[in-house]
Amino acid sequence: MQSSYSRRYILGRVALYGSAILLALWTLAPLYLVALAAFSARQATFQWPKPLLPTDFSTDTMQFFVNTRGVIDSVRNSIIVALVTIAGSLVLGAPGGYALARFRFRGKEAISLGLLISKMFPTAILAIPLAVAFLQLDLYDTIWGVALVHIAMALPFVIIVTAGIFVGVPRDLEEAAQTLGCNRVQAFLRVVMPLALPGLVAAAIFTFVISWNEVFAATILTLRNRTLPAQVLTALNDSPLYYRYAGGFFMIVPALIFIFLIRKYLLNLWGNIAR
Amino acid sequence: MLRPYHEVLMRSKLDSLLPYSLLAPTLLFVTLLIVVPIFQAFLLAFQSADGSFTLANFQKMANDTSFGDALKFTFLLLIFIVPLQVVLALVMALLIHTRFKGHTFFLYIYAIPLAISDLAAGIAWLSIFTERGYLNSILNQLGILEKPFLFLSYQNLPAMFGTIVVAESWRATAIVMTILLAGLQVIPRDYFEAADVFGANTLKRTLFVVLPLLRPSLQNALIIRTIFAFQTFSVVFALAGRVVPVMAGESYNWYVTNRNPGIAAAYAVLILMFTVLATWFYFRFLQTSAAEAGYD
Image 1 (tube, chains in turn yellow, orange):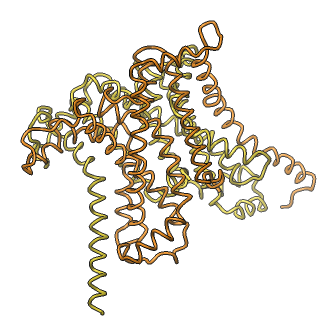
Image 2 (image 1 turned 120 degrees about the vertical axis):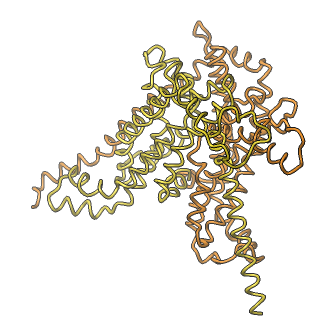
């Protein structure tokens, strides 16, 4: 009895860890391979068959990519757009999130539902008319135009996330601060903000990822002032494979860092937003 | 320090306006950058040069040779990718939820594709599926293939389609997993045996206890992935170029290549229509309430 139980237990463990490792390999393999391709020499693209281990590590391909006309500019544009998106969506969205978390008021359900719906709209239906409008407003082919659209795309998420964060800050603390002589703004800044800060930082990082990865609107709304994904996408057809590998790898790196930074908030951010 | 009574009264009046003023900037912004553009998209799609109503853009769109293929491939991708994602994500979520030793490490690994764009995902898989890519290299070294197999050629359309399914499933499975895992955590732990998922009893428990309880999360994952499947675009461009046309890609082409905002907007309206229909379908036939799908 005892030994058959323990044999089943061991088999179960082997199956459990076996599947977990297999799924991890499935997730990591493409990342490893595109990194391998990005850090091989350019001629290695045409090598056959390709080695699967980094036997001839080289920064040749990455150097070529970074020195290609427009790439550095597009990276700078991507970073500016993402930072403006973070600032804009938090400044606009966090007060809204606070309102949804703290108050009961008429129209709250309607506003919540409206926000929920607004994140379902396809990018195309926003980007195409906005490109036409931006032409008239002198916002076409500017990173500010792209940032405006990214803020609009990020806002519903930011409000929902910040509402969740503010719900987690006990109301009693805020009221205690007010009875002790703080006004509403002081109570918010001195008591609520410090407690909400880690979550808000995670929300900011999440917003960065949304903006950094956005392709469709960025490509439609720009011509020369590309963001990195727009630059890589428009070059897909007439760029060598090694350029694409390097571009792909370049876009993936910040994503990896950010996942690591907000790992504790993963489920709260993506898991609950989507609910 | 107590406040005078009239000050408290004034505050409560102000307080009733406070939530609205806190939400006002957002509502204004959303109106200008989401609501107005949607109206304009409809105008672009349905208005002729002299301002009268027209279906000419939709006729031109439907008469284009790529239209039928774009519809077909968009829906085929949806049909193949969404179930694959849900099954893979469910396995991942259930595994992580057993909280075996080291489960957080695996969770982080499974979550990595969350932060990767569909363009980057397409490129990563391009390095695998291209003619002299890593998959052909592996198959060659295993002695299975002498010459490279052309996964990404219009002559092997099913294979090409398969590579898109693989790449997009790989990327978006992580999103579904977090939704399901967040849903699993709400289910009281008594329902689970912490130990092996693989005994027959545990399998039955998973099928008959856990899955029904997980239904709201499963439905939401389905809605979200279906909606975004209509927008599949750059992963297809990276792997197949225009050999496999999809709706969002056609919208892009009409705008960027053919400089025709009217037909591009017509595609956008079509995508929106499918989005609304799919959402309606799921709500109607899977009976999720708005409150469940939204936030509580």
